[in-house]
Image (tube, rainbow, N blue to C red; front, side):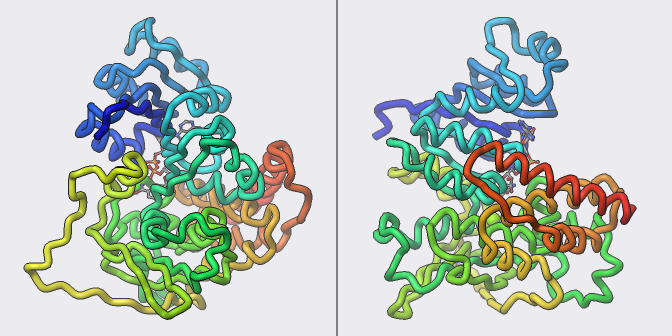
Length: 390
Ligand code: NAD
Ligand code: MG
């Protein structure tokens, strides 16, 4: 096993998924060779990764950081910059891990697939926004998307033999589990007083700031419905959500004969990361191993969609199709950033996204230029609403 070392590009290397990917790579030096990394901040950490793994190419976001990075990594390391730099790195590795945060991950997704690479995808925003474009580019010979997002990785495992059947006729529903976030059970009155600091305390997962806020609004689960629909080619009305506060069952597949298959582990992102890197092999590390010698309970409840309206908003975007998911995700990114910067309150996030969606203008989405135009339009509207709210 592991006779050929596979090259890995890790883009978004300094983030939460990025550092957990490094943890997996550290334990498997004979299987994987880290050949490129990218990050937009924490350049000192980025340089430390380059030195530890003897990485040949580094992507940064800003030209003005180049000199400082060269200083830290030495002149032999190639530096690439910006979205073109990300695309160049994604084009040339056996496995491309997209751990970039937000829509900025789009060049990674597109370039990895267009060049027939395995895309280990954490960056859901790029897939959601570009779903119609990804649909064609993922047919490039060799191209493959394996989901790092824990729910989708669970579904990938539960679909097992049925994974290559277009439309999955033997599947009734994909069932995404949600922890419910820090505000599970809160009333609308309580939520009106929720602070950003409260929202940043996730009950079961430790993640980057943006996705932690998305988990508190349930927008993350809404985005995951869109992600599941795009990944598995199943309409969003066949993707259900159930709240499961323990985050042990990572998601489920319900077949037409009533059988429900689930994937379980303690919450540990290194399990889905290792699954995506190792496929078709399973790496022998037992991340998140469950201890059945002690009693524990698993509970399930329906989501409170009357209170957490981000979820129905995402289903509505799925129903509209076209660029609506791109608008939803772009508006949400702007609102969440404003919340994290203290310019709007937590309670303003979903109303801003909702108002942007009320102004949604359907229009062609047949090229990357179309997508950037939709993204810019949704962001402009969201920024104007942030101004009014702050
Ligand atoms: P994070 O904020 O911790 O890290 C983001 C990384 O992306 C950093 O390395 C940052 O430098 C880099 N980055 C940001 N903008 C960039 C740009 N323009 N160019 C290059 N690099 C850039 O985020 P995270 O929590 O690791 O999440 C990353 C992605 O994975 C998100 O799409 C998130 O939804 C998804 N995801 C994360 C988790 C998790 O456990 N953290 C779970 C499931 C899915
Ligand atoms: Mg998830």
